Length: 282
Image (cartoon, rainbow, N blue to C red; front, side, top):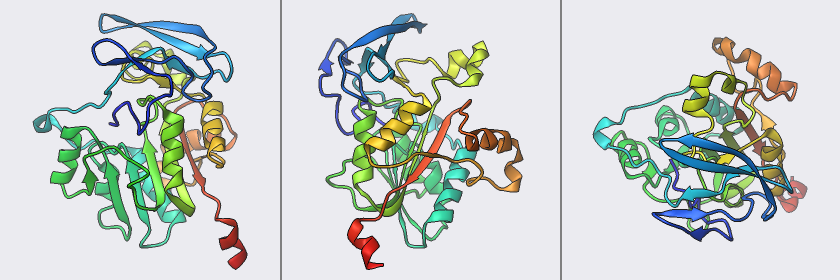
C-alpha cells in the first residue's frame, strides 16, 4: 500500500498531532468550502468525513501522515484477485511485447508475479517495507520507494490499483503517473465506489467501505471521470474487455458498466492520446 503522501501533499495540508495532517482543502478541486458528510466511529475513534461544496467529493478532514501498511514480513502471503488477471488481459489487449508496465503502490506485487513470464517489463513501486520485501523475495521487480515522476522511466502502462483512496493528493498522483506515460499508453485505475451497492450489508460495510483512517478518499464515478479529464484522458469502464468466458460471474457487472451504471467498485482505464506530431507522422 502506498504511503499517504502519494508523491506530494495536498497544498494546504498541515501537520497535526501524532503523525496526522489536517486536510483543509478538497483533494480534487482545491476548494475550502465544505459541509459535514458523516461521522464514522471506528476503533474507538471518531473520524469526520467532509463533502466539498464545489465538486461534491467526499474525504476525511484529517489523515495519518503515513498510511502504508508495513506489515510483518513473516505473516505475509500472496493475495491474488480476479482484478489482477483482468488488468493483465487489458495490457495484453492493448500493448505490444516489450512494453514497460509501472505499478504504483503495488503492495506484494501480485500483478508483477502473474506477469513474470509475459513479454513485458514490469516495475512496481511500494514504500511499505514488509510488502516490498515480500515481492522482492519472490522475484518481482519491486522498488522499495515512493513513485516519483522526476525519476521514473517512461511507461506504456501505469497501474494504480486500490491506492488513490489512501493518499492525501489523489489528483496529483494520477497526474504525475500520466506525465510518465507514453502516447498510446494505458492508465489503469481501480478505486472503491462511494455508492457501492454492497454497503447495504452491515458486515461488508464495516469491514471494507467507510474505513478511515485506512481509506481517506471516497469516489463516485463522476469524481473518477473528472480526475481523468483533468489529465486529458477519458475514463472507460473495464466492461467485457478484461473478461474471458471463464469470468462469467463478472458478466453482470460488465453489462452494468457498459450501460454506464456503477454499482460496485470503479474499474476504469484510458488510452493516452498520441502527441500531435506523432499522429501526423503516421
